[in-house]
Image (cartoon, rainbow, N blue to C red; front, top):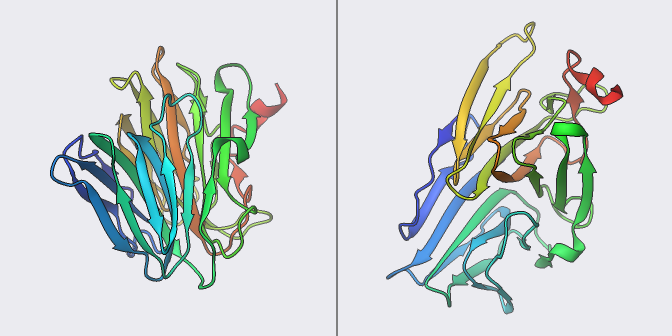
Length: 266
């Protein structure tokens, strides 16, 4: 099942967009909007490790005696910082600015991990693709952290461009492929932009499907399995947070759609 959830907008509150369930066994995803009467949010990670991403306003993050001041983000064309929080932690988010938006992705973790601030200068940068499917991929959490099931980063598409191309998937053990769920959280600059995502399986899949979703600023798409290419409207930079977790943890463990893998050789 593939769920498409509209963002809560700017209303202060805590919005769980995805919980671990029969649809998503590993990933959870929550948006926190600070502002107005909600100036802070305090929570415990429990059995989950979590990745905190920041999209609006300045945020102070406190985790069991550790703290960091996250400055307001200037542009979606460049990667933002991410804070990795291990399982068994108590977290306090507070906003010195009038409003702030934080995305929290979680997956089952292990005890004993350490809090980490991954700043833009520390992310792994990859310029991928060519022509109108060239994009920048920024990987914040992969093999750089111990005790982590989560893999997380951001992709920035050129206006009118395609990403996640050739279409790829990671939903079974086959060759180098490893089954991992994924969530895409979309942001556009300017914010009135839009794009599309198609999520589909091979035709010979035992339970085939083929869905297409329009996506706008603040939308999230849950991807338990299947190929998932994305396109952006001309004139608008598309940035999406991507988070993965699954049966194993191996960055790059995906398989291209064999019908379209030929574009790599053009």
